[in-house]
Structure formats: C-alpha cells, structure tokens
Image (tube, rainbow, N blue to C red; front, side, top):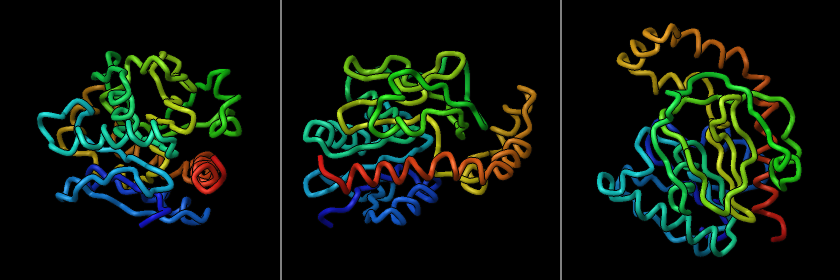
Length: 239
C-alpha cells in the first residue's frame, strides 16, 4: 500500500490502539504487519513511514524468533533512506540494537506504571519532540532498556535515575521507551499471575497501577496525542 505507514506489530497484545487512532485522525493510512502470525516483514520501499510497536520478546532474540533480524534490517534501511521511523518500547530497543547500540535488562530493574519524562535540552530543539518537552508522564512497562545508545543517537529524555526514555536515531527516526498507545485494558493483558506476584514482592499492586493509568486517561491523551499528530506531520509533510 504505497504511501502508508508500515506498522510492525510484534505480538497480539500491543496493537497500535490509541496511537493508531490518532495517526488516522491526523490523515495517515496504516498497513499493519504481524510477524508473530507468520506475515513476512516487508522492505521500506514505497512506505511513507515506519512504526515499530512493543512486545514481550527481546531485541536480541535474533536466534529465537526468525523475524527479529529482518525487522532490524528494515529499521536500518528505513533510517538510511530517510523514511520517518518511530519505535515504541521493544520497537525503540530494536532500533537501538539495529543501529549499533546495546540492549540489556535494566540494571535498575523493571519499570512499571506512570513515570515522569526527563527531557534534555536537545529535546527542546528536536523537530518531533520540541513541542512536547514540558512536564508530562508516560506509561512504562518494561524489563529491557537501551543501556548504550548508538554512537550517532541523540538522547532526548532520561528518567531521574538516568534510564534512557526517548532518543533520536536519525534525522527522521526516533524511539520512545514509554507506551503512548496504551490504556489500562491493553496493559492489563500484559499482567500475568506471575508478574502480579513479582510486583507484590516489590510492594506494588498491579490493580492499583492499572487504576492509576485509567484515572490519568485525560492527562495521557493530552500528553501523547500530539506525538502522533507530529509524527503524521513528518510522514505527510516535506522531507
């Protein structure tokens, strides 16, 4: 589908959801590739943009899942030819790994719930994030992290503890560790019984975390719908 944003969805539990709706409201057309269902990973040729979603697998699982390597190659191709690209959570990690960075489990442990975004000065000058670099929170739910960004990357946000949250990987390529696309129903599908127990051992209540996401819906829409509109503007506008 020439001119569409190619959406790579690594697993059934993290669809484009709200972010996809916002992109379509901004005039973009989406074509979703589901490699977990055996769909082949396309090349970047003919697509106006690339969006890589999240998933529970790892960015280094090339030998475990046959589509991980092709998605990394797709990212490299898209960035090299200037196709506007955005990676979300795993998508961000795949971009980091594909372009020469290092992804490992977060040395500080799992990130869950609503976390403030710690913008850098570079974010305020960024084409996509410049208008967003004000106090706001995002939903994070991840074990892994881009612990060493690629050499050419520009860090746009870190947590108070120094964990990478947002990066620019190329002139028109970005990654976010947070999940702008989710609501509490999507996140709820990720919470297994084992994870509930792990969270409880850390003094965290899974249901309370989900309720906090639900109660912050208006805040999160206001914070992240503009990211989708901005990305659509990059995709649909001049290079």
